[in-house]
Length: 368
Picture 1 (tube, rainbow, N blue to C red):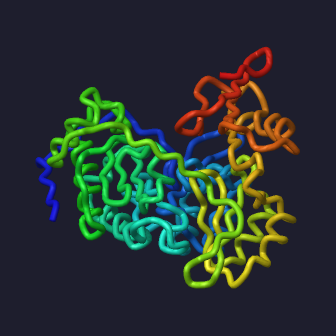
Picture 2: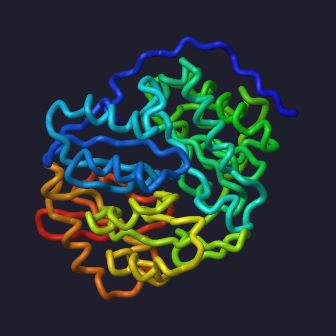
């Protein structure tokens, strides 16, 4: 069994981490912005409704988390109480570091080489129980890919891809069985903190991921190339039930969409800014999803088009990029490459991998 050894460390305090959470709210142009970590993306419909009840807008992020917009000043305490009651705030000290993505259909559709669902729960519990790991940056990302190659390509700092351990998207040479996966992921997070100066991500380390790999007893290898696609459409489960994957245009949920989702037993918010509804007896829900504005056809452009907040939500933005993206892509076929619309050079939320950037300028949009 692999038993990584990590040197004891004393975490170094860095300049303030401004990554929003539940208790640390970002002051956006349209009100307070809170981010709720949803490990693995799975929550009940009732829990999603509880999150949505707090603000004036609900978004799915590129890490399969939920983002609430329009919070009133000082609303954090009441919001935290709502989430705690709903079972979505197990730790106030670790709430911003519970960044865990997982294969949305793992254990349900028969693909992959393992069921990552119990690993998500185990990793979340162990992460929250480790006081040192509360010092991880809010941008540090764990990924549990069951071997199908979907979330392994999302730029996680530390990932399990089947049995392989990836560090910043590169093969560490380490191989683990499911029983050892969580200890290795936590050991890698400790190793990052030991190597960290002012860096937020493992890929930003001056030493690269190589020194972290060596602390774990591995050696860094080549980048791992995977190209997972968002689950869209009706998907057969191995137990005879079905799941339905749907794209959410630009990741922003409307009140009508929230109403449909709130009545479901299980909802997965995915890193592709969509949803998966699982354990359904049949596909009858498709009609209601389409009527609410979800896209359930694999050829829909909304499976590959994203946008930052834009105006009026972001004071930095030079344009209402969401309105412009909706006007441009509605009725068109899916783009050959993912397209991200951004209101400024920061290009918040842009996808990993090859994509086209539509960047707002003073004179219109520039394609990159």
